Length: 86
Image 1 (cartoon, rainbow, N blue to C red):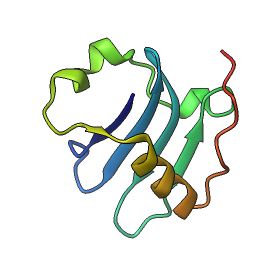
Image 2: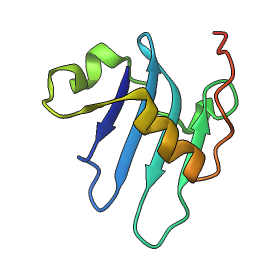
Image 3: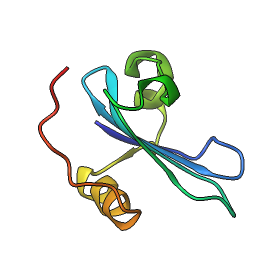
Image 4: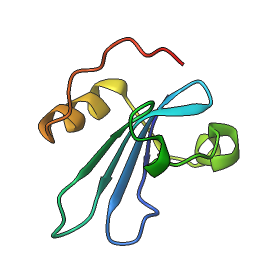
């Protein structure tokens, strides 16, 4: 599940969920360098709330296509996704 939450004031937050947990996360704020986070490497800086507790699955318009997330991720300099192992 790929989500896009525009609830972050003055910025955007994107999350690529693998099951209940975030695999990749993007944070973008005006006049700041985008932050790209990857599970297993950046765990201390990532959202730790499981998908079912975020409310995103019930929020209309929160879900985006995987290709949309990947386009933003690659555009911001993120490495192509490799197979994720929990």
